[in-house]
Image 1: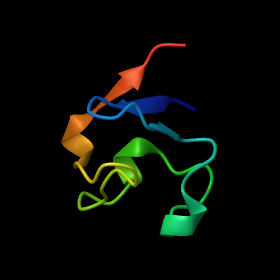
Image 2 (image 1 turned 90 degrees about the vertical axis):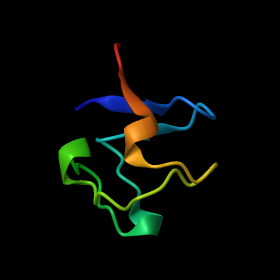
Image 3 (image 1 turned 60 degrees about the vertical axis):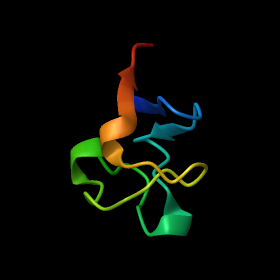
Image 4 (image 1 turned 120 degrees about the horizontal axis):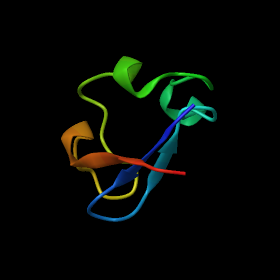
Length: 54
């Protein structure tokens, strides 16, 4: 599983955790997150996220 960081505010989307409060179950791959999903902290789109190397 990978993590993606918002380049604007630093919020991290973790595929292993998902975003259950947004209807995205744990284990949801980034590619499967809806295109219209927005950063819960600052509201930018998926295009403003980058994969984190861990």
